[in-house]
Length: 404
Image 1: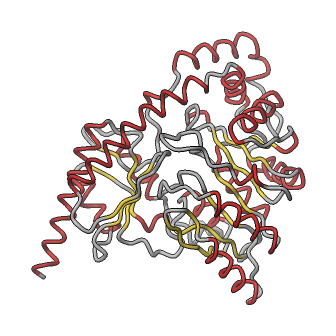
Image 2: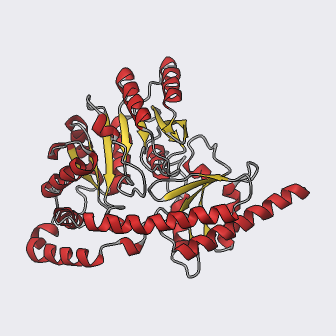
Image 3: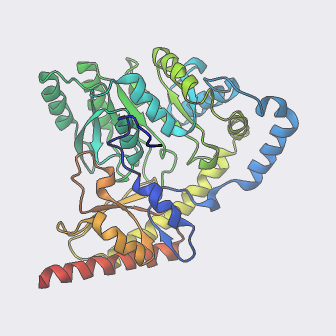
């Protein structure tokens, strides 16, 4: 039978990261691509105790269908978490538990915009957000960043231009802290200006914060949500980096007018997130296991980040540049402007190493000579070897250009 498929996914392409993950577990292959936490950071013994407790004491509930909005006890603990870490309050009705923050992104696109509507992202931005927005046929417009994050003056100019053409953006999507893919952090001044713009033009801000707890140095910058006085910010969080990704638990915090609508959509998507995973996450927070796990992970990741920066300094060709994140999981590197990192990737895979090419994160396809490098998953030895391999490939390509 010749199936006649819908047009909904016509323009979607497979994620380069998903394609590369199949190599991540191959023997002797060095993955600097996937945004995966180190398995050494997982709190195995604590989770084993919690899982046994869930089975023994809550099994009849944890193995059953759950509430679409999320386990009430878990939502209470998420409220406590964000109050302690991000200094804002949220009640249960403002918190929606999702199947990973990726589901939250898909819900956001579906609830806040119609196909063809304009939205604004950073340039570059998270590939999963691009996928979610593409799936809902949104018209993405991206605004550049510098070392202090999103260029808010350029953001306002873009809003004015779009509004004049009858395409006022439906929301502004940002990862302000240890951004994916750049690792950069938006300054406090820019955060305040972003909120002023949001209020002035009545455009919601979506603050995605997967990495905020993974700070290696410097002082915490207040979340945009904590600065918001007009309920203009929709906040996305996840347990993938503060517990482990396999349980697929994320959350959205927003005004009830939003969570009520997202809740209706979630009923159509999966009825509810895994009840069992939610019970585990609840006890994980209630027991404050997170307060032991995060410092261990931060100590481990700081050393790996330093190892990658050292390897880049020792190996990458002159003229290359890269970010110097104070936390998170990624370094963003730019190489010779005439080298296309998407084209170069196949050669890197043949050499036994992977990265993610810059254009995977670019709504405007303007990051052709960039790459995202993950330092949390590989060992320090693999980081050194992987960067050395990529450097040799770059140098070979530069030599070919010189003789061409």
